[in-house]
Amino acid sequence: MNTINHETDLLLAQELCVELRAGNGEAILKIYRQYHPIFLGYTRYRLHSTDNDKATSVLSDFWVELLNAKAICSYRGLASLKTYLKKILNFRIVDHVRSTSRQNAYEKNVSDKDHELDEFGSEDGSPEKEIIHKEKIKLVHEALLMLVDTSPSDAFLIKMHLEGLDYSQMAERSIGNKDCPKKELDKKINAIKKQFTRDGTGSLSKFKSCVERIMRKNNLIQNDMFN
Image (tube, rainbow, N blue to C red; front, side, top):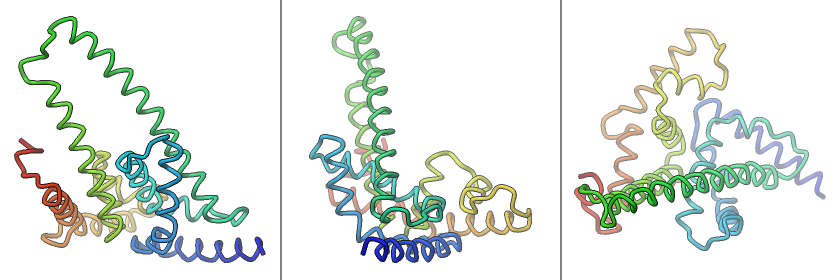
């Protein structure tokens, strides 16, 4: 029975691999809707937290990472697809915990030094700035996750943009092979540029729309977050 399940999972993964490599990011929804609720609970458990914000932050990176097709295409059916994906998710959780630990240690060190200099903080109101900074990060993660649900291919481009990649680097990562012919790479670069910048329906426009929807939902105005 397990073998049959694994063979079914392998066929699904191979199908997703082909579609993702062809640029159909929405194909990821075939497993997103099935596994996201399970993985959300698992991530909360591994983070030892009931805070959905922390879990969704990690999960948004996980799902967007899967859009580059490399992980899905590497699945060989040796375990269930759920188990395979959970292992990848666990790596992201470990990375998040390590990164958070380093950041907390750094912030504590900076906070201790600031306290020695001025008990009431700096002129620019650093405590307030820190809160706003964290809210901005939370807003970006929520908007990115919302975009993953509606348009995974656009979410993949936004994630790469937030990482500081240019169109050429985005194309190389999307193709998954930096040694591809220059003609093919140039074609991919132009396609990504059009998809990213298209007025009203491009990746950036869709992401901004998600940000605005979340801000309205939380009764925020632009000056609250971006002044």
